[in-house]
Image (cartoon, rainbow, N blue to C red; front, side):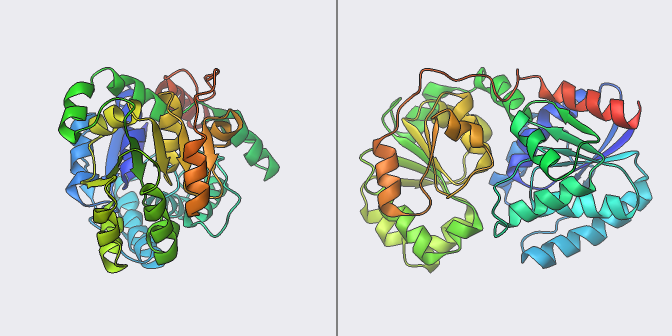
Length: 357
């Protein structure tokens, strides 16, 4: 089987790493990087570190408004799919890359397989929610990480081609937790185990809104421990543009650093007192490593983390964030709701089952 895999953003590289290894045992894979994340620290370094094969094609789309970026990707991907004539197009998650890949394939009547199908925040103001809903309704194979995601699809009338495979990010987290040099990383960042919080902020709803971003920064300055904050390039730009750089610098607790590699992120996260994030993937990774999380959003697609007490939703409200951090604890139970760390093999088996080997 010939599969065109389309990725473009940091979380997708992490998800694709184990699937690429499993897929290439018996099938031909053509790897396409749209260039949605193009900064070296957000792109090339992940391919190198995670052992992902170099992309066969890099579309170099770069940044832009949602419509313009998606539209440019759509045309380029369509041309490439006509040329490659694959049996399947494999997409991941909920980015503009995901949507463009699914739309281009569907228009050409090429079956789409969607990793992380069925996730819902039930907030259509989030671009990611629109992307994932549309992609699911275009997909022939829906590769679900949790039982809740299967239920979400069923509620929308999608029951054919649906498979529970577990979470591919757990595959990568387990593999690299064993090789990450924790002591070296913590020394390099000047922190001790349990003596700091790790933070990430990248969603447009937070990083592009001056009031929300300011509230998050003020909260970080009040949490009582140093906050190690690898800053997304867009967020860094807006901290300066919104006049928040001085507030960060004067806080005494907030330590902004360059975007971290995957190994550095694993080491920093697994040793943190807690995670403060608006990332979907990192909420799960915190759960994988038994680290309590405060999510800087009012909803999450990873509802299990909240239901099991490992995650608190605080939005971008200063007082709520500070209160949530103060109440963080580690529940006694952490059941394996995201699978057994072998989701990549299940993904490949499901594609073979529904589309033929």
